[in-house]
Image (tube, rainbow, N blue to C red):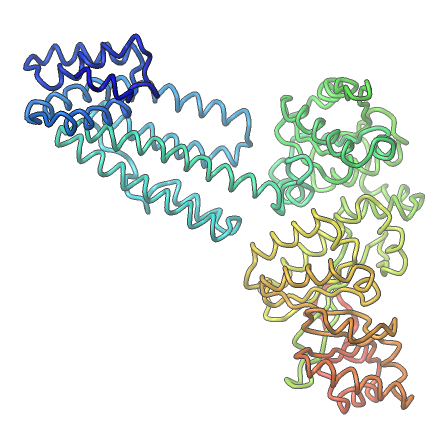
Length: 606
């Protein structure tokens, strides 16, 4: 046996003082006929933390190297393994219970669910061995984690889905094989399969973690900066909290922090605030936009506010963060009323908004600037998606709609001309774009029409906005195939490479692409036509001048070029029958304008 020592096969995993113990133990397994002697060696091995896996490899090596008789060895090895089973499985019970407590601290309740189901399944498996019980949900398809996975399947990419299912099925297969070995009292083989099962479980939990990590980055419900739920999720959840208390908080002078120290420092500040607040006794937290958070609490708003205000320190600049906000018992209008209270309160510390009558809010509305109105419109769900019909000449009917942003202000519907220039300079602009995307998809998901959404170059340059768009496209793959993303021609030429890459990326989801107001800038057509486009929309100023022979020739040339490249053409500003017929003669594919129909909130009324 000493020849094994000379070959130095122990050095990687065994302390030098234990080598003689292992050699003696191997002799015991090979030649002992006394069961108690083997059990004693096993117990001593556990005390010395001798790893079972490495020891089994060594035992196999001994058998082959020394050409030993395996008769007694196989029987003795199972006795040795049986002692390890009880010790190892009992330790794993404590390990997995500690993991459950750990996950409670680092991830949210909804995400924690999928981890807990797997860990509890593993605990059930261990219990079935130690207590000789039947394991619950032994079949992969009936397993609760499998059912939960299919509940979340829209948020998981194909490769992640395949890896998830592959490992999940392997775990159930190994568990089944391990049980067979245990029932046949082949404990050595059971332990080897169990160790592989435990290792696979760790890999499985890592896969789950990666899925949720990815989900956090691009989820339509998660704010990518702070990792907490966003405004869309808040608006969906708020009815569940009627009767609780809404505490709305804003960071004082956040714009100055952002301007002075940069956007990255500002993002770290927001994350720090979110992490601090999450650890308080609250029911939920949402980042509704910019530096504003919505906290759902029981009823102790003043107490929670005191725990937050001037308690969070930015060490880099030795600065305590101050807040201002408002609170109100949650009902249908609580979010809007709290927002009005903040605007009217001129950033004083904390306002009790319970005494504000919703019917009297019109007094506030009249005094708000357009900037404040845009902010309130977002929180009060007054950003509206209007739809304008597009006529298909080939099918002789309306087949498409363009989604257009509108804002409701005290009964009046504001067109983009009245607010878009201001909105694009505001921090909440990206939230408006996300709302447009989300509401458009939600509206058309159960309707047979194609639809288009307008994006700006600012949107395309915004990583969070595009990540949100891609997640929507992933969540609604069938709807995505009916969607067209439009971009203005003059914006496309400002960053041609970025726009072309963006069009190429979203086309992989089945989305079509269009260039709006084509011809308005009289750009280099060869340059523009090299973009990967499905449609061009000829600018209305050109369509309105079709009586001019030069404009007619221009449109005819554009149509021929587009068709030769596999693109279709939409004429904008088709305002009367004469233009409608003229466009048709020029072989344009679609018409859009007041002659076809004005934008309406509900297409049923068109």
